Image (tube, rainbow, N blue to C red; front, side, top):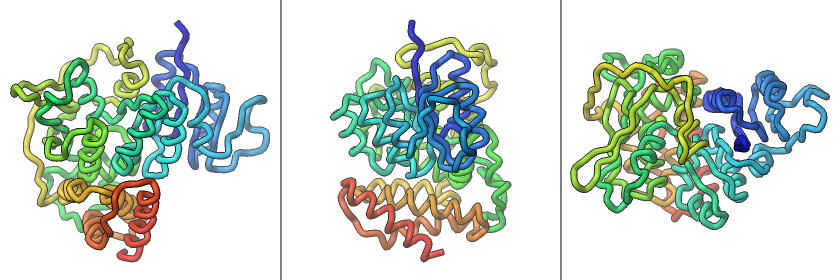
Length: 368
Ligand code: MG
């Protein structure tokens, strides 16, 4: 059987490098790579995988690409290049344009960029149906729900139950005014990039995932629930109308979700096939007082239109400001709440999305 060809958008990040591990496991052909600032790692990847097309946001030294390699002018140009699957792993709303470029070519989109689904869900599904493209989730929770829904009807779903590890501060008696970026970046379970690690510490990651789940599986917001599950072994669950639940469990390793998004509906052997079972599984209700980000996401979802765009943009500004030492950890949800307060309510169109994104980034900067 011919090996699949894949494109990795965000190849030097956490999901990108783990996707290349999966490519090593399965011998996939890497058709294209797009990367941001880390051109040194990108060039190592080019050397190993010999992609047809490459984009680097950082300038590359002259003659550093093998002869015949196409140097693309944008990540979107790589996204549009022919392949079986594109893995969208550029973090933040910056990942949206390449997602659109990929969807407009009819190839499968393995979506790790949750922000684009949060902000533009319905619009992305319209594109997918227009061009006949599949969207398969890579986010572990959404991969779990996707797997639990195989062979089921969405009309028979009572609840999607997202599990949350709680991040590094859950249940800890620590003042959120004094948290340092280093403390917030140290996630206890998952190996992730800085944006999603900070989002996990505030629980905004789970808030974004609630909105992502609603958009991906096209269910009403009040059917999406969150439980704290410290072991991160149950990756999420679906409760059906008869009261039965289906959960997907497994090692906390993103490579398995990446693998499944590429190979679905097939499953393939991996080096993680014989990991031991997790010993104890616990579930508890989230503490939404201490972690207001979760409720902010529900509020954005209820208000609808461009509010999820505003939530996401304000959060991106807040996370960067925190990492730069310009605001406190406790200031992240506060800044998002304040930005949402003064947001105009607009229906979701592409024009309104980009306008709301720009407005919210400016507003959040002002508020800092
Ligand atoms: Mg996740």
